[in-house]
Length: 90
Image 1 (cartoon, rainbow, N blue to C red):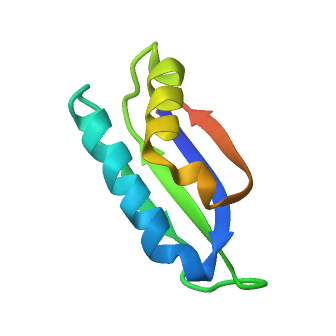
Image 2 (tube, one colour; image 1 turned 180 degrees about the horizontal axis):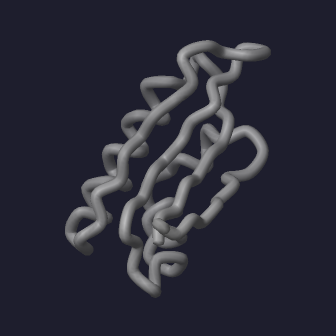
C-alpha cells in the first residue's frame, strides 16, 4: 500500500518545509521508508500545496509517521491539517 500526504504552507516558508522534510526523511530512511516530497508548481493565495509520497508502507506506518512528523517540526509551518490517503496497487 502507498500513502499520499498533502498539506498547505505559506510560500515564504518553502525552505523551512523542505528542511523539515529532510529531517523527516532521514529519520524514516533508518526504518526502511524512503519518502518523496513534491509541491504544486504554482501557489494559490500565497500558499503552496505539498505532497509527501510513501511507497510500500509497513503496517505500523501511522505510528512511525506520527513520531517522525512531530520530531521534524513541519507542523509549525502547515496551515490547516495534513491529509493522508492510502492506495493499493492493482
